[in-house]
Amino acid sequence: MPLTFRPTPTGYQQASYNQLIPTPITNLVAVSNLPGQITLTWSGGDGYNIKYSYAISTGTLVYALGINPTTLQLSSQNSINTTVTLTGTVLGGSTTATSANVTTKVLGVQSFTTINSSATASVITTPSGYGSGTPYGMAVDYGQAKMLFAFSGNVYYATSSNSGANWTGFTTVNLDTSSTNRHACGLRNDGQYGYVVTAQKTYTVNWTGATPTFTAFDTTVAPLCVSAGYFGATMTPDGLTFILTPYQGTIYYTRFNGSAFNAFTSSGLSTQRMGVAISPDSSTLYVSNNSDQYTTITWNGNTGSFSALASTSNGHPDDRAYIFLGGDYTGTSPPKYILGGSAALLYFTWNQATKTAGTSITSAVSGISTDTPNSFSASGAQGNIIYYANGTTIYRLTLNVT
Image 1 (cartoon, helix red, strand yellow):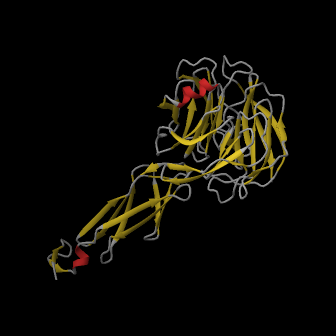
Image 2 (tube, one colour; image 1 turned 30 degrees about the vertical axis):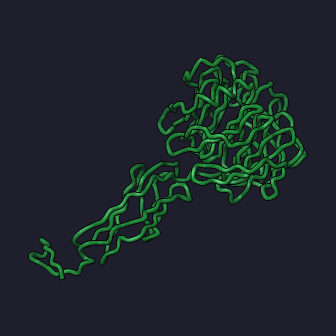
Image 3 (cartoon, rainbow, N blue to C red; image 1 turned 90 degrees about the vertical axis):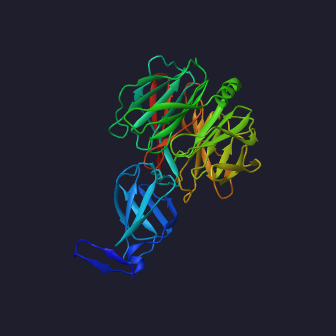
């Protein structure tokens, strides 16, 4: 047997090889299927009475449960991008491996089946300088703690400490020299990341700190949207997939890489209208054409393959923007409705299994000044709360759901 020296007890002791040197750790894989959790699997790392320890590069690890697979429980359910380092230690040595970056899942919504009624309430005055009918973009996170409002080359942000009951005044950030051209913005469920579209650029929003920062990643597609006069924008609730399409133009997509969006890629498809909605699991894109259509998306990493557009129902009017409602972000409970509109907010049913939009339209809000956002974001525990501006007031639309 090999010999190893231990200070306590004093002297040389005999030990078998696997007590001295563990086998190398290979194929260390870290995945996140639930908010605040990471699952580890690996090969190797064997040794007599081996002890494992775990470390993450970002965030705080609370405990580890089980061994290969191992569940790591984090202190927060906010989404983080991190690596995991696994160390296996035996009597006389250790082995270590570090995973590739993993982004933990974003907190999801509870699904609902039926919209029964709707109600609106005023919550905050629009930013100074905003006028009725001016094109704008607005987004509020799942917990109704963060709000973005974009128009005329500026983005404005406000916060709430009581789930949207009260909001601070807006703080202004100048992004570019856009005038009254159309804008759009979005926040993922946890409010940490999102996007803003102006007349000149598309920006990644990073709101992991007390205030948001904005970094441009596109100077090509945003100007195409402005040249077209109208455009559609949609993002999945987990912030992974972002679609942007100019009116009567190409449908572009990008994917979030853990800290920012990649450059836009053409889907190879085009649309005659502008309203689009991406399903929460990134698998289906609803496209409002003269006859409404859809495409299914197959993902190989961050590269999407889009099927040919297929008809889903008769066209729906007033299609500045759309959003899927009623499903969770994992796709285990598919969306049940689509909400959209401009001078009115309308909703109709959606059958994910058959990719069919209902032809019966229900009005949730009417009498809105002419330009609602080019994108919608859903807030609240069931994704049943929509914020919009009308005149100089921002309102909260609450859908009564079961």
